[in-house]
Length: 372
Image (cartoon, rainbow, N blue to C red; front, side, top):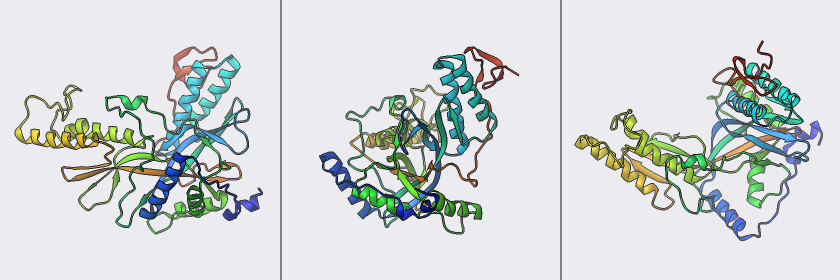
């Protein structure tokens, strides 16, 4: 495909296949129901991660996600890649030459706003995704679908989230993969998506319009899940980061209601033992505090009764929302951060200095093998 073709989104082909396997057919039916009941979209904004392309492993236009596309600014994704390459140099390098190449990349990531680099034959790119959600005519955000992945036996134990799948990692991004009819329809419909309205600064609007031309295709990523909350008739606001499954989001909300909220509200002291929560309150508790803790515990208990996706307590509605993301795609692959995308912090050294022999020192930047 030529650069001239890249300016005409309608010329990017989409391979469509009809789902025949029962589970996939059920997922397609769920998607049809969701499209009918939640026909509008609410765009939340960009998320960032890192994708890689290995000539020996990835063929054609395919890339692999190596840093989850869940970070709120480009520098967070660069920092995650920095750490990944540093630990690769520390634990996996097979020679001084390999370690030197990895540490050279780390040194760049410590000082530059690097959006693409190649290390040991692997091409790494900071990628930009657009996060959005489907909403109904009343402004209600879509909740998990019946066919979204759920664990056979829900695990509610503290720390269980650390054992959950890491979402996007190793996800293959293949714009040429066949799609079901509804997936194809959504992909084509979102190709012209761009920001509009006076609430966006002019550079953001210009970058968004330009991206439709430079990256005319889109690739849809798997659904993710998060907590959203609303008080009264106010707008929905995010209450957590993205999770790989709806159950992970419910478990996060369970912890928030029983452990974090009581401490935030002053119902349980912050220095109380970690085992003290709304279900196991302190012995010295006022009647009013005990009543509020009981309400929080009862709301959390409702989450555990089946696949509950919404609870209300103390005037706030908490909902498990289904989030979607798309990557804009051009002739050279996924879109990188735009000039108008900003970061919360500058590049910096994240780890102690590692030399070419794998020894760790605490007297210089991580990526400087010489210590100078």
